[in-house]
Length: 137
Image (cartoon, rainbow, N blue to C red):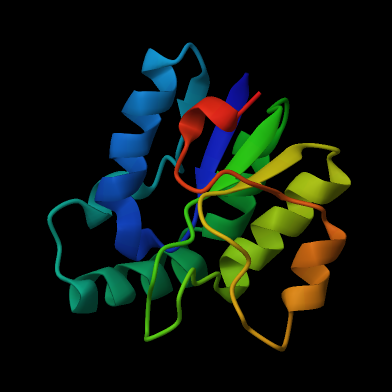
């Protein structure tokens, strides 16, 4: 299965770890081509890089292009900013892209308690894998 790994770029190193695990399970997993700038950076540096990439490198469209032909996305929704299982605005958009492309949506953890868009996430009917990558099929 061809799977895009999405989530906050604060978690870039974890995304790469998950990509390797999915590859070992026989999947073709990928992250954004813009990920390398984030490796080894502090959270503050990553925030600056994210803003630069969104505004100057068309990061949103770059991942849209990468998603074409994929079978699924895995949302790496880890804790961030005091919110358990965080899903930010950009990740929510990428989930919406996957939904309209008829791709499966897998969540690493349960849907976060974010009142502004919890129902939108529920409507996309994601599969919650609770960190068990073998549930991706």
